[in-house]
Length: 333
Ligand code: UDP
Image (tube, rainbow, N blue to C red; front, side):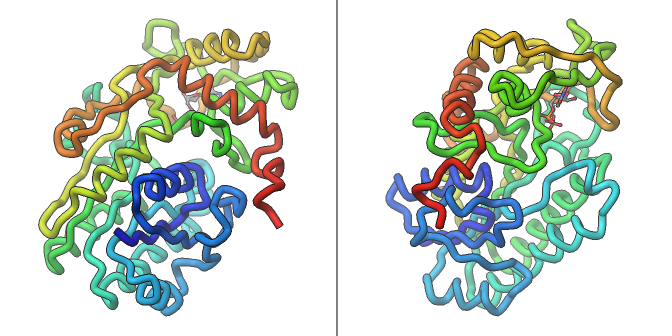
């Protein structure tokens, strides 16, 4: 298939792009490089453009005879979405509507959308099933939920097929250490812990030790980025008009913050000093996926079920690229 990958220079998008290309698909990336990295995409695959430029996107779709879209482009800092919701609604919602208009104009009827467990808000049951009520607790989660709803309505009215894939905690890096996580600012637990191990930070803050969990710290479901990528590929290859999938992507295994830190210590051989601080506002105690539907519908399951392997892959990336993609001189200008 010929696939348009929006946000393909970002963390999950770049891994998905590689897996698409390795599986015989043709693909072109549209990324405005607001957060994406040029070095994460082969140069001949990257078009620098914004989704708001509807006519540009439309002409790219026509020129490349696009059959399907994988839509990763979005702003994803939860805290910033609270202080600057306009930026999030404009970029994530209006940007996506512009993309959907371009799909309508060019009769592209398949889309795999990058959604999130943040659409659930505070879970009533854990593991969280795909049909759990969706009640986001921040604007970021709402922007993703609005798009899920738009996709459901468009699919119904225009005979599209779509998959909204709700990720839990994306983590890890490509096995060969050549693609990985590089956010500015970095807010995620595993890369921050590994930056301490690299000597780039003095300590890691541990946000809350009084949660109602066995060791008092939050529990999350860390899903390897290459497992997310293969789930996207499986969804893409199975989409047809009338398919409307809303699927959790997680491992089903919950790991606490303390367990992550211990594993990072074991993998890196570094002490990784921590400072215990207050809870971070908006963090639910436990988020773990029930991904049975994804296993069934996509005939997919995660390869990385041991957090140690995931952290080892992340460490290969961070160790080889202590400054992220700024160290990938071979692909930058
Ligand atoms: N966390 C932490 N210290 C940090 C960053 C994160 O203790 O410097 C905790 C955070 O409170 C949450 C877990 O690690 O319980 C995972 O956070 P992350 O930001 O990686 O992902 P999120 O679950 O927010 O999507």
